[in-house]
Image (tube, rainbow, N blue to C red):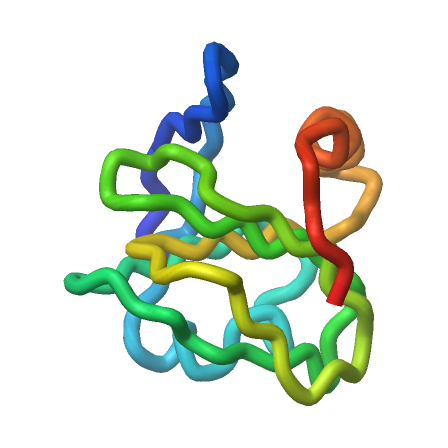
Length: 117
């Protein structure tokens, strides 16, 4: 596990998170396997719109940011969705499982306008 700290920004708010910086295998498997304990960070060198799915996953928040960690979009993802696609290109995706361990963070983030897919 490659844990690192990042600060997400939304307007004047900042959120300090400890995330697991995902390698290629974890990018492929995401929360299907690594769903219990950590926030997953997916870094992309170029801005892009990457499709994800939620097969075999519990519900989670998909937080899309630019390269400076400014939140662009938050999607509340339900289980068994074949296609989740953000509205705009992004540089980073943080997957936050909707579990008790992260309930304070997710409740706060849910106060930010979001999309349900």
